[in-house]
Image (cartoon, rainbow, N blue to C red; front, top):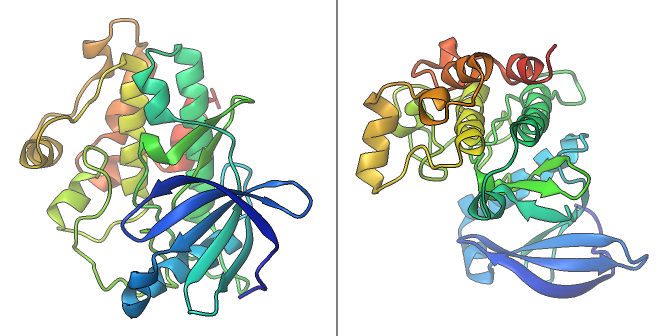
Length: 271
């Protein structure tokens, strides 16, 4: 844990089940985000462990598409806090709600997302041992499109790694419509390919301008677990065959049939 930095708090950026985030500025005027766990959650050691794991994991990453951790600490009441760089921009959920985007912008954004995921999935600890990190909640609301055309992947609150005992293995966690079949069914241990599935859903939606898995919880889960692998080209005729093939590979029912984040990124970047 680090010492609490001097921060000037601004507006609330959002309230979740576990924590609230605030815009902030440090003593030098740099834009930060303060993530503060709800005080009533401190009495549950499992919830505290989730926040502390998120901070430890963010501290291990070093990628421009992932917020830099500036501090993690507990206040006098034992409430965990995380201080991160602030990613200026809009969530892809807001971008999609505003209308269609170009194919070039869609592929650039998802390539940037996959680059960040490749870093997450391949990161090792100081001893060189793989962390086995998985974000678990890749969804438009957790991908920030920045003003310079890059993207930032945020909210590692339910991420897993070797550093966190997975006491909720088999429990369905994530955002409805972006969870992979193995997450929905709980039939296998998840890994980075579950994040690739979610990135494939995001790519489909950016290319077609429509939601892929919409409806009630049961309807969505059945479609993900048992429905046909969708075609972006069938929904939008301007999608090239190569992009459509990549989307279908990312959305394969069996995880072993999906590309890695690095492989999918290479396709989008023509590598």
